Image (cartoon, rainbow, N blue to C red):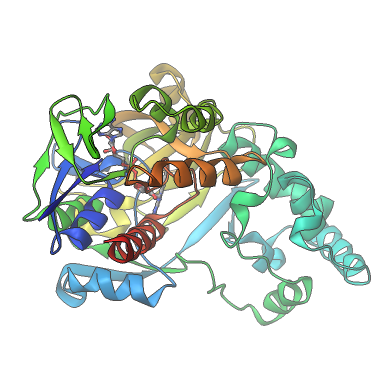
Length: 421
Ligand SMILES: Cc1cc2nc3c(=O)[nH]c(=O)nc-3n(C[C@H](O)[C@H](O)[C@H](O)COP(=O)(O)OP(=O)(O)OC[C@H]3O[C@@H](n4cnc5c(N)ncnc54)[C@H](O)[C@@H]3O)c2cc1C
């Protein structure tokens, strides 16, 4: 049997390993002492802490759903929920996505937003590729009023950067782009938005996304606390850290690191890897908290007066997440690295009488693409394929992937490998 080494035990590495296992001898190499990457969780005195975000699952791709549900019993192991997300503005809770709930805004504000949208209806709509950057795109689609009220402040916070410098490539197919006519009709008929991937979602009854990790890892050969720092090519075989060899390698780590990890003498490859070494990304600081009861799934915080940008009510996803507390739990998310003292002060100003239980900083949460990123990554992929190295996942492919997109990517790699072998 040929040997495949998979670097990284996040959802990408676990999925592709399961898919390759029937035909290859597969081993996963994971630098951390725990498996799961961004989706791992831990219990803090009984309460479940999603160390990054608050992962829920769904997909619009039926092949991905079929593959996923082959590994889980949907009825007995998962809960299905309808999103109940709100935006906190001026101490009021407004529905999410905001454009469907303009009637909930104060009358003066909703009047100015709606009249601007009506004016925009008479003008020709630009296609996405005609916009130069994310800011212009949001203004072009939703108008200055909605931009100033919500889209500008929220996105500047979450991206932690000047969004007029953020290009649009990453956005393709990721955000719903409602027509103004649809927005107005949704407000008149008070229709719930249902096209976004997490408008309804699945969530494990126990242990959140760690449950997904543990199940997908069953039966796989995983070496933890093993950092891959050298990849070489000797006599037609891949050699890792001068000690392990493989016929195929799937890299699910950070593409920026490959320039120093790959020791293969190939000038064109190293030039391509240098072009992706400085890609910008954003981290997040997360605080697990106890909160007063509510029925929300997510609360968005666009206003400058709050440093946090979102509260994820993970305690409402499953009661078993609150086993160490008499109250519910939630995760408060801040963009970038924040000092604990600052976060503690900020929690006091947020709703729910929050009591902090644990902190985590994740340096690699959000990828930021620039105009050349997609073509640069494509060249890296092509040059690596000569050595049977494949890139897979959010930071390896530098794509704004959710879990389902990682699974979809794993399926594509399996197909590609099947053709080549
Ligand atoms: C705040 C936030 C909220 C999110 N919410 C959702 C959600 O609700 N639903 C959803 O579907 N998706 C969500 N996502 C997206 C989801 O987290 C990612 O798509 C997914 O976890 C990426 O998995 P991955 O395996 O590609 O990468 P990772 O999870 O980053 O895994 C990479 C692994 O490789 C290991 N590694 C790296 N380098 C090396 C090396 N040199 N040697 C050995 N090991 C190495 C790392 O330690 C890590 O374990 C969210 C993301 C964020 C940031």
